[in-house]
Length: 300
Image 1 (cartoon, rainbow, N blue to C red):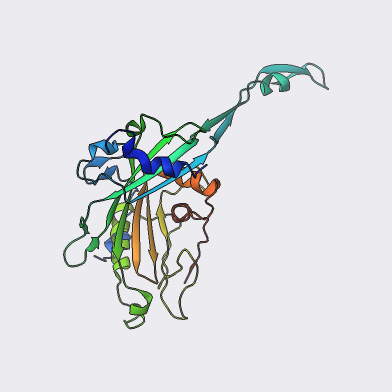
Image 2 (spheres, rainbow, N blue to C red):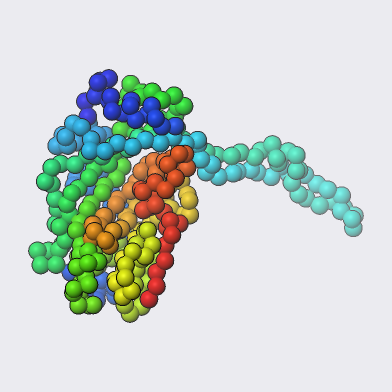
């Protein structure tokens, strides 16, 4: 991204309205190791270092939030009290200890997400026989600054950093699956197996016989249709500000269209989604994908 006032006209306008399947994959224990970036680029790299991306983003979003409480700390100020049985009892002086109370905050301010894609760029996840084609590939960049004014800071380029990836794939639709055998291995199935082999089991993952999975938006199928779930590796705690990992991994799919997504999300991308969800954009799509509290159920 080139610096300059004209380069960020789109941002100023936006801010103006914002306040192969195999048994071994399951047999061995795999520890989750978060991705440290994508295609040779590390998380936190400046947008300006990506020379192959087009100048203009394919999408931009913004949000604002107050600083979020991280924790509360205090320390005991020792004192003694008379003991009913004589002598003294050691304890904490309530008033003096209360004065040591500290509430720690993190984040806050404006968050801006911009997304870029190289036309026709794609990747192959796995081998030629059982691999999955990933296309389109969307690079995500996050900027954050502490302010209440809807003004793009002059040093925007120095804070606009690589914070996530959206990797899309095409699986079978529900309509197509109705014409296929019940044990047909879908593109979604193949990709899930590769994610399990690479990252281990996601949060709350269980498998007993035939898995029946539900999409984010609830049931959208006739009785007997297969269903698909959202799986999350290293998600944040319920409604938490961000993940504690360098990056989380999320697998989602829309069973009606068969369009699936693997989302790599750093803490800064989680913070952006939090700012959107909690301040004017309730039901934000990214927030719902990241957080398990957006109605999740698995049946067998």
